[in-house]
Amino acid sequence: MLFFLKEKPVEIIAYIPEEYSFAKEFSPIKPAKDLIPSWWKDLPNSDFLWDDFTIKSTVKSCPGIIQTITNGLIMPMWSDLALQIYNNEFKYWFADNLYSLDIHQNSQTSGFYNEYFKFKLTSPWMFKTPVKLMYMNPFYHITDPNEYIVPHGINTPISKYNIVASNYFIFVKKPFKERKDILIKQGTPLLHILPLTDKKIKFRIETLSASESKKTWSILGNRSNFVSFGLKNISKTKYM
Image (tube, rainbow, N blue to C red):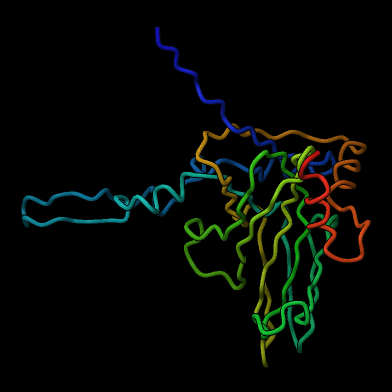
């Protein structure tokens, strides 16, 4: 008798603090396959044209694009963000008045995009995941180039806890003369999150109480070392 064991899916949970319940309601993280871009939906399928005896091709027959826009998760902006840059200075305002934006000085990445501001956005979302997550620019969900660049990165869960943050960077080129005003609206796709696994993904969202949220952030934001605290935390819990 043959027995076929059904492969267990990888479970990924997106946590959101209670005070950010509005993000869960109005701009939640969703599987990419549930947020197919409208331009893709409106695109005709590739077809053979009998009248012209030619082939009409569209990217709907491109496996690479199909696999990209239907896999992983899309994280939208949870609140409007106004960012203004002028005379090598900047100011910003989150509409929710809850979160902040940090800047990383170019001295941290000397020789890399020196003419850009490198802003770090602290996201309210956290993930419980047993696999690494790749954070990417949601390229196919944006029809025109943004005024900012979202660099790629791989986030490794802290073993035992399997928790990762969803903080990300945007690079904005410094204007030489004119003022630059950027408005990132709530619901704008910010990150395409791709779990690095071939297994099926089971995804859901859970709300954390204030005490649960504080405890989880204390694990993610632990700075018990002066330098490389993130790498050291991963190393410390690797074999726990």
